[in-house]
Length: 172
Image (cartoon, rainbow, N blue to C red):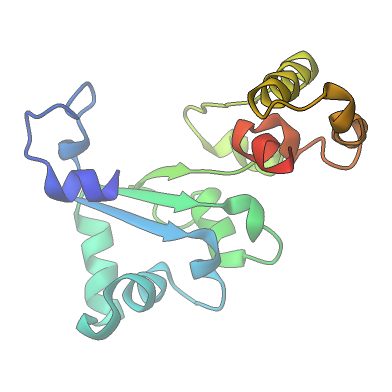
């Protein structure tokens, strides 16, 4: 989304309601980029701007004065001890910024009360997982019995990752 915002002109195929171009600035950070920082401004300066770093004070002022979309990916991978990101999520920091955060299901439950809206993709249910494994077996021309250990493991060990089609294909 951040790249599309930067490269696509307003009025193009990506414009809808609301339009991505309604934002003055679109920023993309991985959740881990918040760790070890005392301010969102310093995290942005270090992880997005590299050598072209403005001062953290200037970035802080920019974050307060512009209409900004902040995309944060992979909350589930660094949720523990990520205090700065926690303050962004509970809206203690960056109250005026539109926040879009990605996470595997279940990791944001206590923070959901701070969001105006949520969108959840739950992935495959058990029947869909079994159907996917069957289709994979047919595609690679192997007997479904060869996949029985995987079928059993998707019930327990791999239950979280087996609901994603890409992960399930990799497991096959």
